[in-house]
Length: 88
Image (cartoon, rainbow, N blue to C red; front, side, top):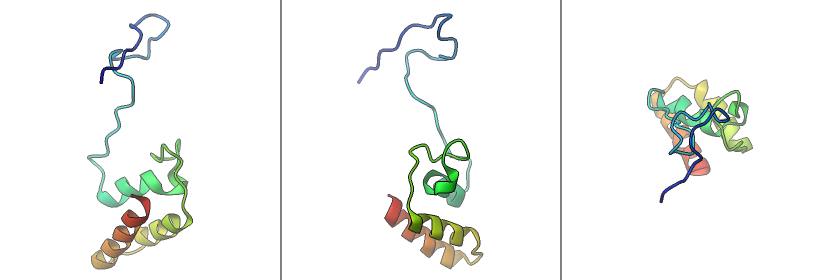
């Protein structure tokens, strides 16, 4: 699929690469918990975080808060698995 974009001009100085149309978003340097939670918790909606789609789910918010306060690795994994089942 090829996306056509207008050519760069004084009217569109923000276009760094006019042949592409979309944000370059990567969380590869983020630890798994926050890289995942910031995409799905209500409190991390843009501009406060990376929840670009304004996803909202009360159970995700509850479990997200719980996992951020849990220091047991096994329990964190269980909570994150449940979060993943709900959100993804």
